[in-house]
Length: 108
Image (cartoon, rainbow, N blue to C red):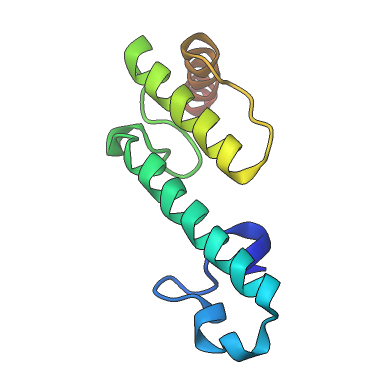
């Protein structure tokens, strides 16, 4: 699972480091690649200002266009690293999505 997801099973260590003798040479190489992807993902995520993070699945405000542009860049980078398609990949679509979610939050 660690190799496929690029997420360590435990926060402070990778299980593939605990028992590398159980892995094939290819799995060991793939585990190293997964660790690089994980590090790069964390670095990208760290660029997101704390105030932009959702609280209980909702935004706490609608960010500026500049902030939305940054978030779009991070989304594209992480999608590329993880090999997954992402939506909301420019400032305008990110902002529209924040507006939609924020309005739902206020309506609750």
